[in-house]
Length: 562
Image (cartoon, rainbow, N blue to C red; front, top):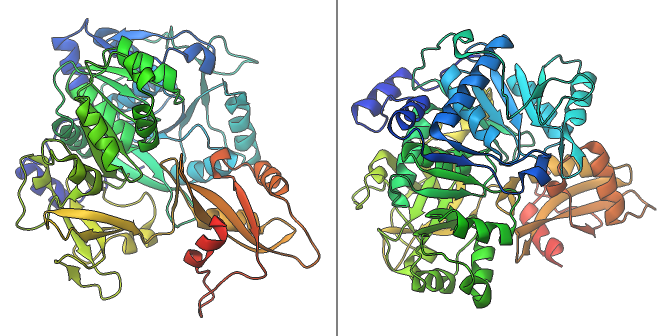
């Protein structure tokens, strides 16, 4: 596998400007071990034993370094080489972070996938990256991930070693025991010279395309992401960070892991989201920064008794996003002395942060985003100088420079990726002629203050359920494959808790009837993730289509919401 995607000229220019530092991820772990070896570094969720059946651990930086070395030795013993891909399917346990750091040290590429993925999605990803190793857990929430992966590999006639985290292996399976990671020593793994422009992760995102899209990132990408988050959340050396995000994308790796590592702090893992456990961790671990969905922050403000029983004196900043924030919520937390940072981001590198430093007014912070990288606008923070943004009218293709006109947000700069993995056709349309990435998100320049953007909506037909992007195009074909369905299209309908849910709109074969539970049972057999299952079914005589025959999905929104 190629280990680089960034053009050499771009690397040279960004390093010359000081945007990229040319420093690899592993160097930060070495620095932490040298300066604070006995500082507590990485903490398992307290319910680890319920999740995977083994006891939670707490690691110092020195202990973490030893585990990373052990995993590197394991990779060497298995015959892996620099550039090989490791697919991981793990809950938020310490091994996920160890795998990331080991790949950064050894030169292998980490490709983490959500726990909810099943053989349908996993098969597509494995076909794209051709991994040399898969790392997972045996059982999670009653599902046997090891058997699912083994069956998938057998049906596809693929021979890929699978390591399972847990206690003793079952039926001779290879096992990655977290108390004794490997019997090999440091000397068994030859050092791999690492260049900071080499790919270290391939994360996955869903858009309007049916297949998962791989987003490669190299060391320089992750370091600048960590720097931006340190600045925006105003993190300090040794800070404690509570991470409820699955370690599968930019939100967790760039927003949590990298700032923790660079500030030599304490990273506390949380999974799955459980409010009582979350609040207990905030207090017991003296958390300084964490993130939570808007619905949770709204609910907590309405539960005075619950908050009064939790000591949040260490908490200095809350991050939130993936859905619009309400002014009263941002004001409410600010009155408690805890500013809420409004985050608009994507795996591809779109990063707009409405911070207390730049926008002390909670109304502004709830409703607007800074026009980072827009010509002629300066900010107190340093990292906005490393990005460029602009709005482009989706119809006229002219740049939008005045309020009152909707435009697609386009981005470029130090945090923006170089293109989707192994997708040349997609990449030809993903970027415009000036090199900006087309986000598909629609904004206006704020009429009251042109320093800010105001989010309008999405031009890409993505359903965002609980902050997770779901491709309706992928679901359309699966629903349509049901023998009773003549044609189908999926659309979003609003939900107070998750933001959006999925409705399957179907036209049935003449004389047939179909119930929602019958459709979901069929889709479960296909092997798609539970979170992609439609939660509403609506029947129509025919789907609305334009003159070219394309389904007009926006016209389905009224049907879906009914």
